[in-house]
Image (tube, rainbow, N blue to C red; front, side, top):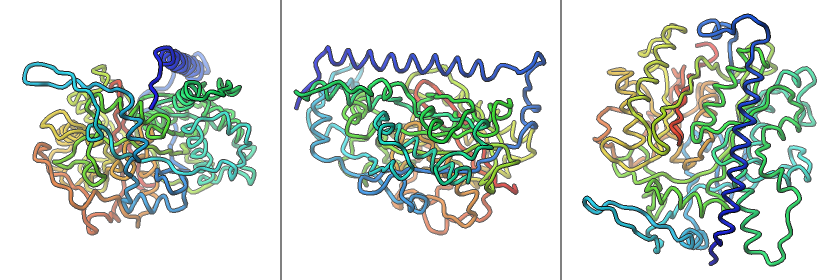
Length: 510
């Protein structure tokens, strides 16, 4: 196996730095211009903004992992709601690539710290959820344009096309109908923008004796999924890319609602795609999470897939894509799937890789209290007729600092005795952790528009964790996974860099 030379690593750092800096600058400039008031009057805030537009989800799509299935298989929704696990063992070649990166962990030895070099397969990641096949030809994407896209971009663009089709906004040529083009925006959420393309090109440079520079390299690393989707369908509204790490999709939906309420457009296609577990990035990102002690190194799928379980032992890298069309209730072609009642996104200003449970609890209380005030929906009603879409990534079962412990701390303070009625849903036992991709947000829209659908169960042998100190209604058996009285879906998402996002979805007639 080869190791990258220091000069090659430096080149990767330079490329990634340029990409991220450009994304931040472009996003800031576009937001500043788009959100500026159209007149000299003061912009609407608070209740006035909420009242200005009834926001709905009119289309939704999900692309799931599974190395032997199409990313956008027609059976995806059925697989998701039935809890079909798409996590698989990593092949020997992939394990070798992980071990070749010369990873050193820092571990506590009593009061001292010691360095532990990762040399054996038992010390590294053994399972992941990986994307299967994707054919952009069926969407009418020109081959020349498809070659300018990295894998994460391809699945995000396809997710947008699928969601727009679900909303019945496209013609037979996969273009927005004329009356929708000027009033449709796009937001792309991703954790590792264009990184698969950048690392792939550098790896090819380091290993291919006949290497020739890819003339499409700039297009691949410029984070253009949002612009390329707009180009394909003719969406001429606001066009943004955002990175809130693993809170990406939920934050982007909040941004979309703000754009609509600020009268910048009538609808926004929110798309997200990440391929952290792909062959190109897995040796780097898998080792990155393992170096932090955050990744599961369990040797088999059944030992690794344990959200909310007393035996959980780390997150599992995954990959996915989703598309959500958010728009005004009036004037949409299809019957809306659900309403977006409330959104909120903030930053805890706390730590790059840790969650501030006290700040999250305060923000969840503020969010739920706002729902009670603005929409006259009590927290008791939310618990009795709602599901909570959890961020739980399966991080180690410590008494106070795991993802699950942070969430339960907030839920217990906010819902109190009502928590026993709230159904808690987790999809990462199905997809692994797909980074910015809000599979949960897509599931909310699908479930609320299909009253008879099941809710994804957790693994049947889940062992309750006493450290969580709360009674959670986790769907484990068939009797638990049908909620015909489901009216609301509360989504919480958190991401590296202290990002926090909430969204509340409601059935159309709720």
